Length: 68
Image (tube, rainbow, N blue to C red; front, top):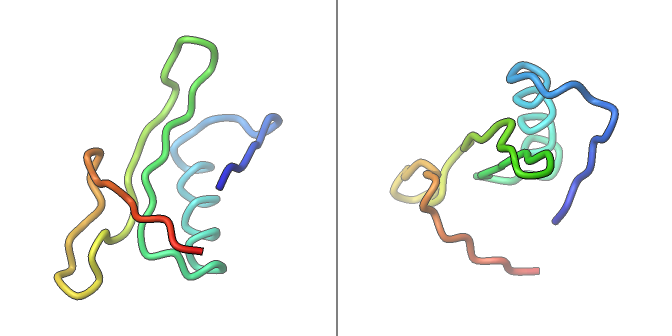
């Protein structure tokens, strides 16, 4: 899945609001994101859980299984 927000100013508040809204609407339990501009990392964060049964949080090392 790929979302692009070219006109949104990258601030933690804006990004957190967008990601948490996406997670709520699409019922996504966990997300890891990185926002890049050319060679620069502008923002990175993790949200939610990687394992609902064990209540394991998403980390930067979480490997996601993609099931459609």
